[in-house]
Image 1 (cartoon, rainbow, N blue to C red):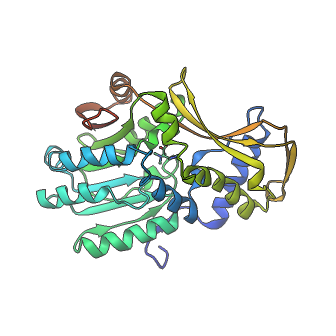
Image 2 (cartoon, rainbow, N blue to C red; image 1 turned 60 degrees about the vertical axis):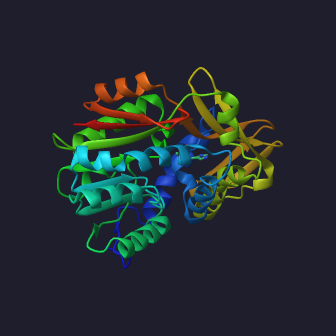
Length: 322
Ligand code: AVJ
């Protein structure tokens, strides 16, 4: 445990090593890419919080609408003693669940897990202050690696909100759902938030806002690589893009080189050249159809017990049992 009483599975050396591995493979690939988790240093986590308040970025508000309406039902149906939140960030929407579960009287333990130590520390402190008597156990970690280490008594409710499951490539998504299933025992729960397929203009704008906050968020991954691996990316050399891939039904965020250039990345022992117009894929954010989500949950060992959407059918929330 650190001073902040977080259980840290990712120390600075571990972070640098993991980034080095991802940069080496992603930036030497024919189609350059970087995993989306590297946006979320302290600044990136704050920029994401700003994104959630943008007029164009509807998913947070749509999901909150569902949680506001259904928190009591979720508490009643699950009877959960432990709430685990994966990729918890500021844990702001989670309060709706905590309130519902506290009222229901079964809640003992809250386990927020996030890659960003700063965002997690702040969330843990705020939640401890507002929920006296709740056992809050923050875990700094990567939910693709550190799921086996989750504390808390059964039945647990694992919440994976915001549509973050859309960041996985389809093949990895199945593996991830299976890994969640495998750490749970029978009669435990998954609450899964999924953004839904809709008008491409609405989707593209949600990832390319007029104020330019998403552009800063996207470029932040280059700042992280500069700081952590001593690279010399000039952020002005790259343009933010939001692209709807209609065949795969996902949004791609890209950073496109504005000119021919070469970047040195000493911490990864490499130099990377870009032709003008070449881009790095920095995120995929898959959008879902209700039948597809239910099928994937079922294939991976879950029984879907409830399905809700917001009034405008923009965002779906599944409650599934092991
Ligand atoms: C936090 C992964 C759900 O994919 O919509 C927001 C991240 N990227 N704007 C998403 C994000 C660009 C967000 N998730």
